[in-house]
Amino acid sequence: MARSRTTRLNETSTQAPSQSEPRNLVSVIAPTYNRSSLLIGASDSVWAQTYRPIELIIVDDGSTDNTRMAAEAWQPEYRGDNYFTLEYVVQENRGPAVARNRGLVLARGEYVRFLASDDRLHPEKLAVQASVLDRAPQLDAVVARVAFLDAMRRNGWISEMP
Image (cartoon, rainbow, N blue to C red):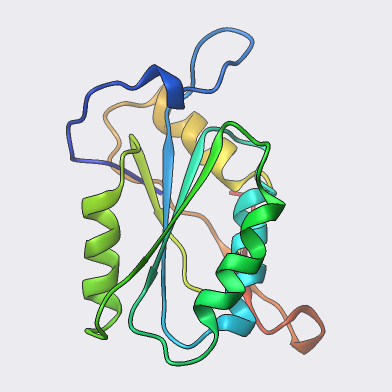
């Protein structure tokens, strides 16, 4: 996860309350292209985070499969969580780098996490990494180990705890 270099006005409506102070918004950017079968698992792992507030930005890079239908079918799952938002945008197919950059333009968070459509995040990943960035403002990024999952777990990557 990285600290955003974009300066934005502080929007208190996106700040989740905590025991002591508001937390910083984390923008998770997920570019995707014809990966509808994997996108839901990746999105679920973002929604399962113990950290809030989160905005999930899915950038569909011109998919020709049912990626849009899969994302729309998933949307009702997160409704009712006032500290989780989803933005789904479609662009002409221009490659994952352009899709990531489009997500960065849309991101409002203090912290940014890129997520491939076959990734799975440990449920505490954002909480741990945001805590490190909060405590060490001189850092620009935080990294962690990853573990490969076999076919029984959908052939994805899951981030291990640091």
